[in-house]
Each structure stands twice: as structure tokens, then as C-alpha cells.
Image (tube, rainbow, N blue to C red; front, side, top):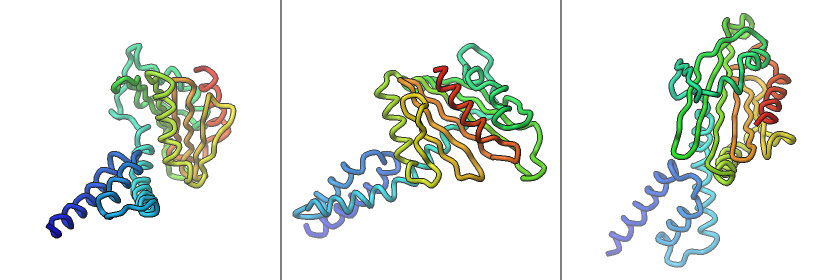
Length: 226
């Protein structure tokens, strides 16, 4: 009987780690469940220690999911129907101001995911930057949620996963809530929520032509237009 309990407890521990890859927003529930079965008399300290452990191992997966979500689901696909509105929100003119050079639309799609409307587009510089040897790329994603609460929850999840990263700062005067993030060398990122609408924009890679000032100015213009 004792060996069976041992196996069960450690199997539960492994399950906790697996669950956190897909349920990183629920460290409290996972921690309490593990400690309840692992200790005969679970204490508040035991729960908090394991909760911290779950948060520590889950954060990298959360950040990874967020950082990749803005890129096109179908690279190179340009939809021209009336539903593909991303390229009308972030226009080529806006993109070229940010990138500081001639660019072209390389993706423009729309999709419905559960009860959220999702629009994506990206622009690519015409030529490689001769100094940095990088080709400028600008990504844009615009979402309309079923209600304000759903949009706010989505914003909070992304912000909480990234707010401790160096270069991430809350931005005032943009929608209902927003933040900027940049490492100062490779990328500029912004996330803005206004009511049930939210958009994110990212330059990756930054070149010698990219303008951070124009990036912020275009962000404000789009936020004001929502």
C-alpha cells in the first residue's frame, strides 16, 4: 500500500509539469492539488513553494507562445476579400514610415477562432539592409473579442507573461491599456487594447532604417482610430 502511494504521488508530480505546458494560467490549482496529495498535512508554506516552482517553469512556455502568435498562420497568403482588413488598418504607407524604406505586403489573412475575429498581415522590405545585413519585417495582428472581459483577459495574460522582461514598459494614452517592449537592438513590440478590440505590432528585424519614433506614432494613430 505504501509503495502504491509513493508511485501515485510522483505520478501526480509529473502530471503537474505536463499540465503546466498547456495550463500555465492555473498554477494555484496545480500547486494545491500536488501538495494535498504529497503531504499528509499540507501547509501554506508548502503550497506557496510549489506554486513558485510551477510559475518558474511555466513562464518560458507562456512567453514563447506569446512571442510567436503575431506571425502569419499561412505565410505568403494574401487574401483580397472584404474580411481581410488587417492591411487596411496597418497600411503600406504606415509600414514604410516605420520601416524607413520601400516595402511590400507579404501576408494578409482573416480567421475566426472560437468567438474571436483575428486579422493578420505582414510587410517585408524590398531590399536587404547593406549595413546590418538584415531584411526588415513588420508584423501586425488585430483581434475583435466577443466582449470586453474576454479582451481584457487576453491582454492581461500576454502582459503578465512579459512584464518582467527587460525593456517592457506600460504605455499611457493608448486605448484602455497598452505596453511597449523592445530589446533596443532587434525588435519593437506593442500591445494595445481598447474595449473588446486589441492589436499588436512587431518589427523583427530592426534595421538601420527602422524608426522607433514612427513605430510609436503609428501605434497611436491606429489606437485612436479603433
